[in-house]
Image: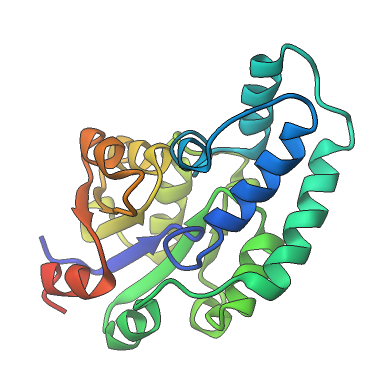
Length: 212
């Protein structure tokens, strides 16, 4: 296929936020009796709507989390993101080489996406090319966010590829009819491949695969 547009997920693909967000969530949930290893959180939480993660925790502990849990989590994670977020290794060089269109399509709110991209030094590369599930009220693993991004960028599905690092994201892309490349991080390899993604382990490897 001739790739005309690349649709990137954000967290764990463009910016290194997954460790930060999952660590804070597990620390907060532990106060209510929830136990989970960080590696399991990568597999079960990454790419999913935040409320689904909270529901998972509630089902595990057998009770409701406080009404303020989401607001408290967002505040703590935002504060951490402001100082700790870095670009994924190799992404700047990869973007600088691209001669085709690209955008970001994420389950997160627009302000979170923008904050993370800004702190990582990537916001200028994605201005006017940011698409959020909150804009269309549809979250991965439903395919609508990627279909929306492709349409807004002016391309057909067959002309686009999706770059993901989560099981939910790969399912979303495959459902939408996209070819999906899965960013393997050591925790997600088996899940991404099982759902139909073509794995890569670095942006240098992806660049060679796409013959950029």
